[in-house]
Amino acid sequence: MMGIGFFFVGPVVGGWYKVLDRLVPGGNKTVALKKMLLDQAIFSPCFLGCFLTISGTLNGLTMEENWNKLKRDFIDALIASYYLWPAVQIANFYFIPLNHRLAVVQVVAIVWNTYLSWKANKM
Image 1 (cartoon, rainbow, N blue to C red):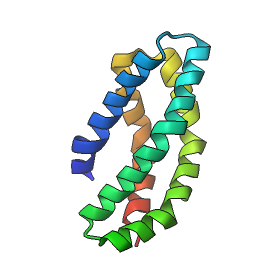
Image 2 (image 1 turned 180 degrees about the horizontal axis):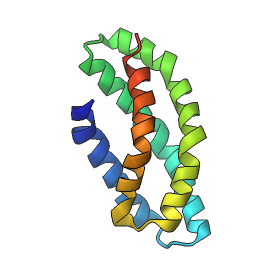
Image 3 (image 1 turned 90 degrees about the horizontal axis):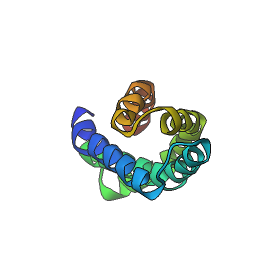
């Protein structure tokens, strides 16, 4: 999980925030809402699918086992993310400057990653 964090999660999330800041510049409430909607509609599903696939592969699952696990766990993880992340991201995009957003997300992600780790490693 540490390797996934260093080599996948950190670079991908940090890069996404930079892209999102260029796509939707500004810092008012409307901009924060637009960023949150883009984050949750585009990034979150792609990120979760990749995360679950990478963790399954690193756990030694075959392609078929990984696909079945992804079909079983993806929707649950996505729904759970929609309970937590929209509120966090609205606050993050509205109040927090770009260079501190990844740190804020990582603090919240301590709890989220515990859930994702359990979901990803549950056979």
